[in-house]
Length: 382
Image (cartoon, rainbow, N blue to C red):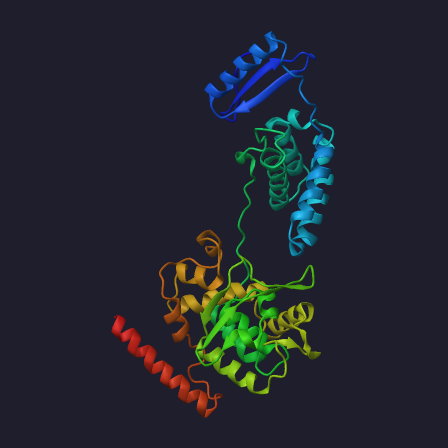
């Protein structure tokens, strides 16, 4: 049998083994495939060519792969996504590929699975999940188990998923919400999320030890994982990050700190020893939006709304990436549509309520001093 060029661009060497079954191996370079074929021919002539070891079916391989990955995966990542992987495999992949031997599954069968999901009317995001699971399974069969040398789940099979515009509030709606929630049960939580763009898990894990009121800085050190009910000693992205506190938020945190009896910045109303309850916080947020007759958003909608505050005060695409601690600007593009780099200065000049008379004299004095320094800094830079 000659060397065959596959549709993927790789080259497959094939030869009929002593047991009547085809022995094959795939290479990226034709020369390597030709060398392998020549070696097999010599081995066959000298009766040294070994029969091909039978590979497992996809069902057998999936059971091993799923078990191994579950044991290796960090506990906080298992609960939701791992269960979804098992459900997706059984519902969409197993009926078509389950009984197929691993090395007999080619791009044509993989494409049939993806087409079947689309024909069932499943959402583009579900189609992508099916693709991602198959891509990962077969990738591990090459890199970890060394069953295969070629991944039949081609990158071009990755379904296009439209990016939907996330719900957010405009600047006037943000101001209305902040005024409306002052002094209310979850008011401080909403202020913190809107001014800092924290994820809800980061907000729930935020402690006073993370807030330096003297230097007006905050460090995002950890997150609470809802699926496992446990704290994770790092935020999403596995990188701690710090930010300057906008003056209006710093003022409210300073006031809250004076009467705080909990280690948490925004504890549960049920007691200082409990963390903020996501379910009731979300319900309260939606109720506040309905009362104001503004778009009803969730807790992540507050994070998206943060960009409206910063952009209106001169922030840029790069600034927002730094604030949100995104891994790439592609993710940031879902939040904003701009570019530059002066997050520290922007954080200092944010004023949603410049004529607010609710601050105490000490806070007003500090704010005036900081404003003067900022004005001097801006004037110098200009």
